[in-house]
Length: 98
Image (cartoon, rainbow, N blue to C red):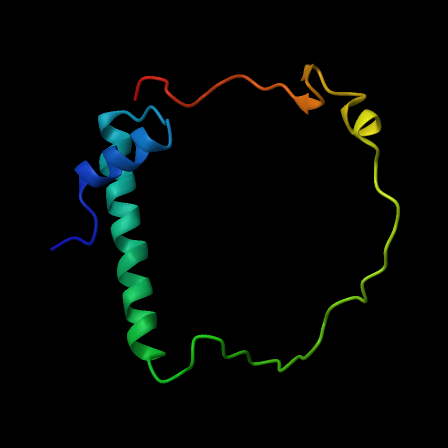
């Protein structure tokens, strides 16, 4: 049984706002099924390795925190195409038809 069906690919495409043809849905369903089966095989092989294991042990690879002055709200919004009440104004995308 395939790990992902054509209907699931269509559902994911709709959620991602991708317009896919029937041929593309079939193609991507096969490709995603192949990818998922390879991931399943790798998971079975590497079952005894802890999830956070790394072949290169590293510790504390972060830079020290240094306080630097940031932008003022005016500087941050200076090049914005649209501003409203000291905030970036962007087009509404939520609530659109699915």
